[in-house]
Image (cartoon, rainbow, N blue to C red):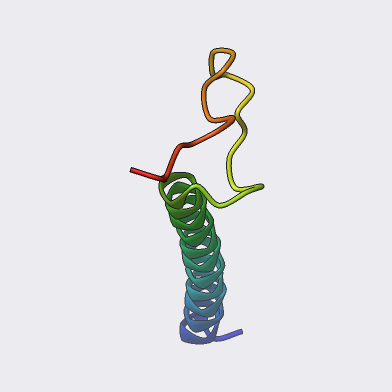
Length: 64
């Protein structure tokens, strides 16, 4: 078997692996950005209020 053929096959496999890793990193980054925006915007279900003190975030007076 020609060594250049083997080298090109290995390069193709490496390129595919790098593409898979890049796509996974991009998905994780997008999910982290989405979670951060939901937390900043206060979207229900986006963040938990379990770590807040009692009485925080329950009622907001917007009449002022």
